Amino acid sequence: MSNDHLAKLEEKVQHVIDTVGIQKMELEELREQKSKLEDENATLREELANWSDRLGSLLGRLEGVAEEV
Image (cartoon, rainbow, N blue to C red; front, side, top):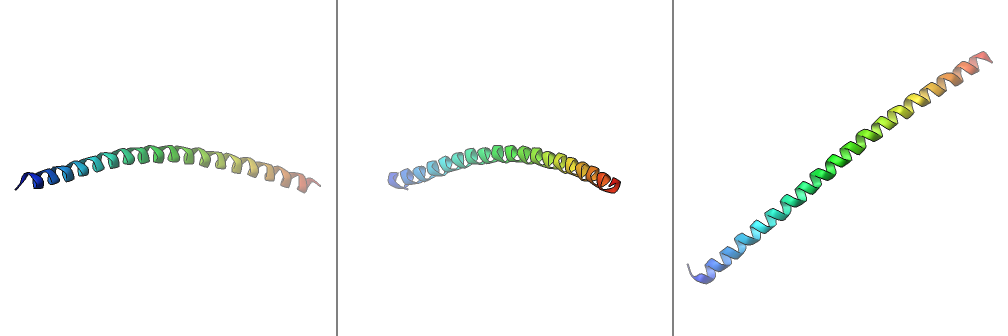
């Protein structure tokens, strides 16, 4: 194997190593984003449940007033 071939192979190997490193960083960023979105989703679901409970309570009170009239 000549020095040119060896140099090209070394260059390609380095490119693969760099690409894998970049992809690992991107994967970590995506995992962090996913975690943040899951937390946000849980918060929003909790808010929705609270609103639903409050709305149900208000509707129940309205029904009670309507029955009195």
